[in-house]
Amino acid sequence: MADERRDVISWDEFFMRVAIAAQLRSKDPNTQVGACIADTDHRILTVGYNGTPHAISDAEFPWGTTDDPLNDKHSYVVHAEANAILNFRGSLKDMQDATVYVTLFPCHECAKLLVQVGIGEVVYLDDKYDGTVDNQISKRVLDSCGVNYRKVEMTHGLG
Ligand SMILES: O=c1ccn([C@H]2C[C@H](O)[C@@H](COP(=O)(O)O)O2)c(=O)[nH]1
Ligand SMILES: [Zn+2]
Image (cartoon, rainbow, N blue to C red):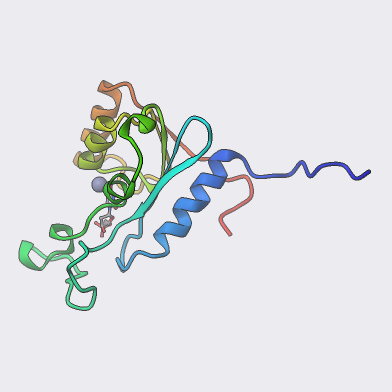
């Protein structure tokens, strides 16, 4: 009888790979973000990525950044974490103590949303805005609300 495969990926790596797959759908030319929320029984609850609201055509959408808020993508894009929460079709009580896997450390607005839906832990891949004011607010929100955050370990690479 053959032995079982032992070199399998961890749950963390599995859910982060789902988040990475989600970010591949993003039309943002600069920063693509994916989010995957999994419950304490290792079930995927929902997935999202940063993109335009439904009614806005990707072709007409300004994907650049400028001082003019009317033409800046940040005014229009729905964040990956927000989309993951909004895409969820179950009962919000199922999100209690769930873990969000995000390819980018959540901004402070997303941190507040994640806290409000009961997320217990944030696992991130990249924290490229570490140290910015927004990032500090985000960490202050998570710290104050007792939400743990940690960087994922991808032992099997990113491919
Ligand atoms: O919590 C977050 C923070 C940012 N995003 C999205 C929003 C934008 O589409 C990009 C950030 O673009 P930059 O050019 O790096 O400013 O990431 C998100 O989905 N979730
Ligand atoms: Zn955000």
